[in-house]
Length: 99
Image 1: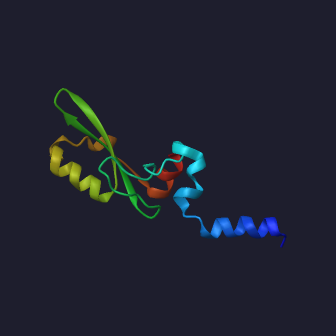
Image 2 (image 1 turned 60 degrees about the horizontal axis):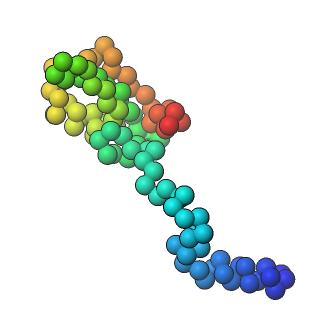
């Protein structure tokens, strides 16, 4: 290992991450919600994802949710307002790949 390589390794191992990545500024987005459903639940590959439509006021609202999100939507929008013909259930893996 050359002295330059040793110095670079030392800096990498001893510099806190926030200082190490400071040169990139705000380009790194830590709040990316690529695996969050419409109800704030994290969707994993092994989950089932519900794409559901509810009658709401004079229109139709679309939601994408995990099992927990589906139950929340039923509680909030009433099961009788669910348009069951449009209900689609896909794997979490498939949904995450689309994101």
